[in-house]
Length: 116
Length: 115
Image 1: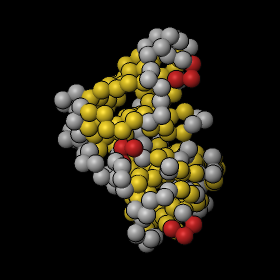
Image 2: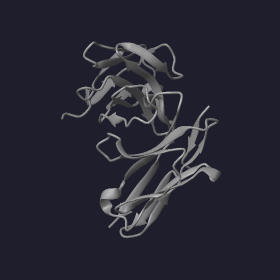
Image 3: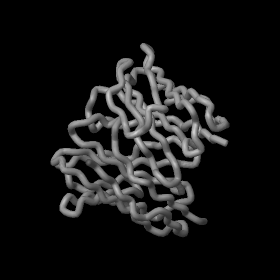
Image 4: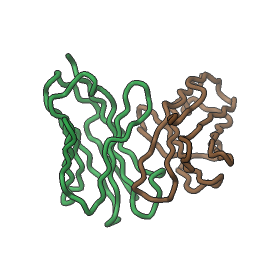
């Protein structure tokens, strides 16, 4: 069985602070995919990044960066110089190789509030 | 290109009633998945449809059912509503080639309140 844990239920920061959202996963598969999605107040989840289990390179996209560490089964997400528009619920998700992405296992989400 | 469209946006029902939610995927997407989102349980997978066939099913009682039409539009039905069914129901579509690395495109959801 797969499991995704986002231990931080809520995080509140002040604008321009850096913030890291943690994601720890469990799977017996050696091949799998990890995702991050953002859910703004409008409701629809928006894809942010996808990473396969064989690619442990960290990725940076503007103010966003992701740190994938297979040794600790973690896929953490850092927002640098946070902005009010970053306020949303962020979900980490896992899709093992023997299933479809539509059956992904999601964490419970981390609600990020960025105050001006 | 239009996104994933879910209707209605809000719904209020009473216990014992049944409800049907609709999802129109992005044009060209053949896979539609449904998720239930509640504050206490996070996002829980309900089922996934591809080419009018249910491909995967989550751990929900038989009161939850769905179907997909030939144009890939999908509906989910909940019969004999219970208070605990109050949730945001999200629909997601993808190309549906059966790959685990496909991006999911979500609708804004249907907020169901059961009184």
